[in-house]
Length: 93
Image 1 (cartoon, rainbow, N blue to C red):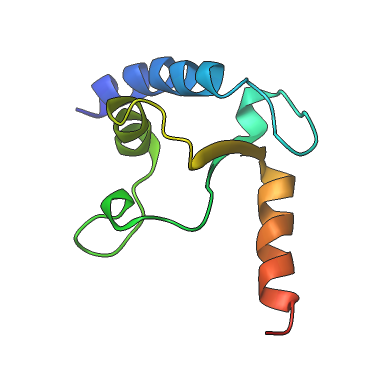
Image 2: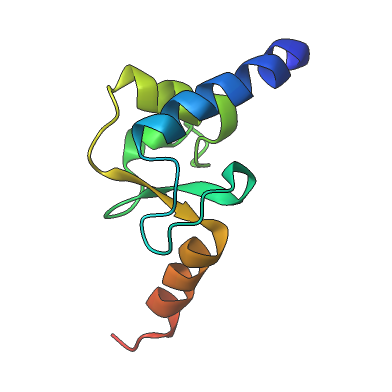
């Protein structure tokens, strides 16, 4: 199974990133190794395993494709994604 996942992940990742423009929506970074998936408005429940953990990797990319590339998904580079998180937790309510 791990061999299959290792072989399939880059293919699914490319399909998803191609659909969403192959670059960070904030800074235009286009190195695929630095890109991440961002859930606009927070992670929806079906993007979580029953254990509560977020789906990631092969399962995440499969779900995005299965849902026909939903509008609440966008691509951010790691720095922009982390920067947004830091802004959220450091902004007083």
